[in-house]
Amino acid sequence: MLITDIKRVVEQISRDKGIDRGILIKALEEALRSAAKKKYGSKVDIEAQYVEETGEIEVFQFKEVVAEVVEPDIEVTLEEGRGLDPECEVGDSLGTRMDASTFGRIAAQSAKQVIIQKMKDAERDAVYANFIDRKGEIINGIVQRIDRRDIIVNLCHTEGIVLVREQVPRESYRRGDRIRALILDVLLDTRGPQILLSRTHPTFLIHLFKTEVPEISEGIVDIMGAAREPGSRAKFAVSSNDSD
Image 1 (spheres, rainbow, N blue to C red):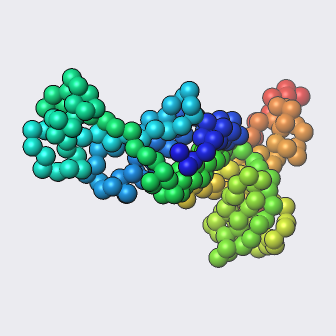
Image 2 (cartoon, rainbow, N blue to C red; image 1 turned 60 degrees about the vertical axis):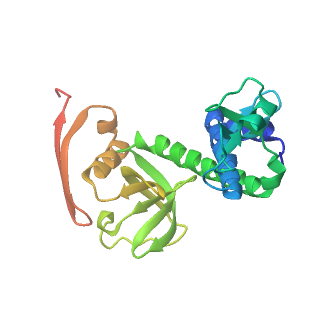
Image 3 (cartoon, one colour; image 1 turned 180 degrees about the horizontal axis):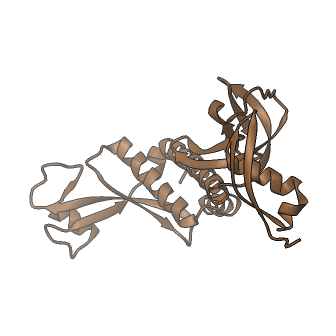
């Protein structure tokens, strides 16, 4: 194969990116099968199989044994078939190993694209898994840019967004400013995880008070509910656990 060190590459990516090696191998097999079909046509019956002992992916072309060949790309005569397998009969399917060097460049490009895509998918899934259970938490970030009045926030390994409707009126941020917000929701679409942040949600205010007011963090006072007009006023319903 022109794709060298497949086993080493698979092991390294699996370890570094947390991608199941079985998923990688299956994807590479499919990439080589697709490359062969691009070279020889969609009708050709192609199978690709990873060989653990050699660390290579072998590609086989299968043809049906027939009495009279009509389509040479997918059929073989009984005489030709018995040259490969003396016990074959009409109707059997015979596989021969292909010379992968004939489509090696296409295969290498396909394999590279598969690996890159799998890495992107793994990173996307890791970000989603990291944030989906953190909805309702407060998070700190750095303003990366302002996009049509929406604030794009750098959250270290990914980005979050504070939409205009989730911003406090009259607050102003510039690139590089620190910002604290509530993880409002985590959505997954074709572009990857979308982490929606809010600075106006009542839960955000409750978390801030729990951080800043010792009686709340110590459980002496419980916040029963909150309502706010962002940038204007807020109301809390509280109860005390202190009999005094």
